[in-house]
Amino acid sequence: MGKSEELFTRECKKISGVADSPVKHRYFPLYVDISEKDILMVGAGRIALRRLETLLKFESRITIVAKELHPKIRVLVQDYACVRTCQKEYEAQDLEGRDLVLACTDSGEINREIVRECRKKGILVNASDCKELCDFYFPSVIVKEELVVGIGAGGENHRAVKETRKYLEKMLNMQ
Image: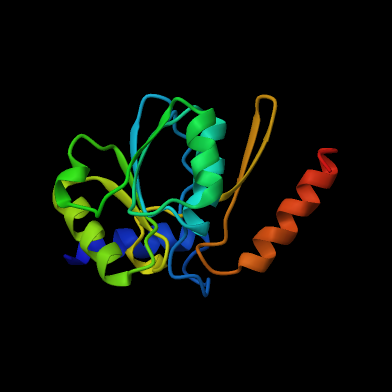
């Protein structure tokens, strides 16, 4: 990075208040229409179930690749035509044509392989077991009619996110 770029970066951090923050960097909460996106979820366990339940609120097209499916995922697949499953081992060719990938396996090695392949192909990826490998974090989401609220803490303070969610749901009369 040249001197002018370093100066620009420092000034941007100073203006935004990030320069004095203990947080390395913040993630921008980008709201995107994913209804026409082709989403791949590799793995079908407990974490994948939570992600799937959230994505289904947004009419997403989701393909799940996993040898075994969580029992609740089996039920959701029957109830939602937008979800399909391929009960098999993950292969790099599963990434073809995907817009977004969630690596939710119980194998860190496979999740890292998925991240490497996604980076080569320019596909945004989230690895459920390693926040440092994520291009984006999966927020806690509240949906009430047209209102959508995403809550995140940079992959750090899950308790604060949960408490904030409960507080907001109470304020929105959702409980």
